[in-house]
Length: 330
Image 1: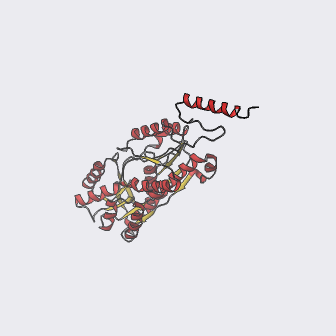
Image 2 (image 1 turned 45 degrees about the vertical axis):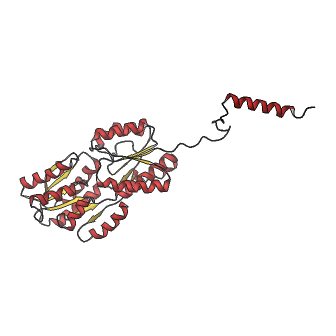
């Protein structure tokens, strides 16, 4: 019996197969071996391009390093609803596993958000759309934040007075909730909101809106900005019209122009959020929902909201806050 016959035949067959394939090894995985995991596709979509989102982006980057994932950050260049809708539709069509979005116009965008939620794990941050099918909101409870600012306004106007409010879009959930909180807090204290102006996230208009009111309404005692860039616009308008020290200002967030205004007395107080935490926690939730949906869904906080908190910054506390802010910006 020829004991070498079978091995020799097998060798000939192997060489023939190698010749037919050009000598390249097969790219097919061995039977029973798992397919290599596809990297998760995650996206963080802001509502504009303000400095606020650069801090949030650093929070996203921190989680990227910890979670060993990539999160694509998308910013509507002009803060327009249609721009954000297009970004969302593009991400969904590209097969993103999870998307976090700060919604510009919650009521108008529900159909777009729901279409996205059918094909990806959708969460919101900063500006919620509670009527949509999003899984979770990460960020400030904006009504409570508005009340916090309103309570400070009451202390700034102990005898009451008239005030004006400025924002990009009052239709945005965060703006609407903040305004309601401010309104409820000042109610019964002789304080009346006599002017409300939108700027559609146009920085030049944000300043000119304030200048127009300051020039047209000498009876206004305080101006209030609801979005991050409104603070610097208000400070510049007060300086430019010579109303610094004559008209008070109470705003939101921690842009450089706002903190400078607090230090030099142009702005009395700002309610700051924690954008770094918004970015970090949004990235973490996206990763968890995309990796193990059932387990992550079971751990979503009651009410579908993860509150990142706020604090009031004024001349007494601005120095310590700036030190923390420098760490967030690194």
